[in-house]
Amino acid sequence: MRLSEREIDGTLAALADPTRRAVVDLLRRQPLRAGEIAARFDVSAPAMSRHLRVLRRGGLIEEDRVEEDARVRVYRLRPERFRHLQAWLERVEGFWAGQLDAFKQHAETRARRR
Amino acid sequence: MRLSEREIDGTLAALADPTRRAVVDLLRRQPLRAGEIAARFDVSAPAMSRHLRVLRRGGLIEEDRVEEDARVRVYRLRPERFRHLQAWLERVEGFWAGQLDAFKQHAETRARRR
DNA sequence: AGAAATATTAATCGTGTAGTTAATTAAAAA
DNA sequence: TTTTTAATTAACTACACGATTAATATTTCT
Image (cartoon, rainbow over all chains, first blue to last red):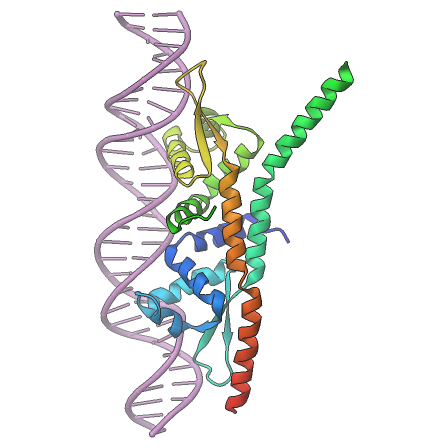
């Protein structure tokens, strides 16, 4: 899958905040409820709620509801998006290989001319 | 190499802007002078200068000076930082195996509670 | 039904960031 | 030496973003 510019923007913007990266780091271990996440940081619940929304819109986490208690919302990481981001980075980094190809072609052209 | 939290922050913050990502995309092809970069976008030279500084501090590009004309500054991509970022993503994505276990445990706990 | 719990949205505030034009630095050209 | 050129820094404005407290659903517990 290839991310649109809009998706890339949301994803990178979401990761550009230290608190949100810490949340991602926390969710690596296991899914957690909104309250549990907020409690582990030095911010208010509303502030964390907004962070979670940004992460969700950035495609990095998703929200689940449990049947036992319809009030709680469980958040968990979405691995796909991280893989998409890796693919994006690979594409950007691919300039290196491209330059190498260009060099080869250049060398071949010169060789053929002789 | 492993990036510090501070470095990760600078790098991701630099990439969280559409204009700066477009600059990165542009520099994939070849190094360019500050003026050439600014001319390709719909922003003033000072604005682009700031973007370039953010990208440089984020470790994504570097500045070279040419001997023919000491006024011009040539910017080019630094591939290492992209690889470091990939490594960081891989580390975060590595949660997958653990997540599956956690899921199972979660499901079992729920089942037991009924 | 009424109270407590879970989480979000609303309203507000301060700060950081991107943009602009003007001023500045430094080097090449005339 | 004066003027142009290349690029940055300075000063200022507009707006998006993060944080907080208060208010609002919605669901559970007594």
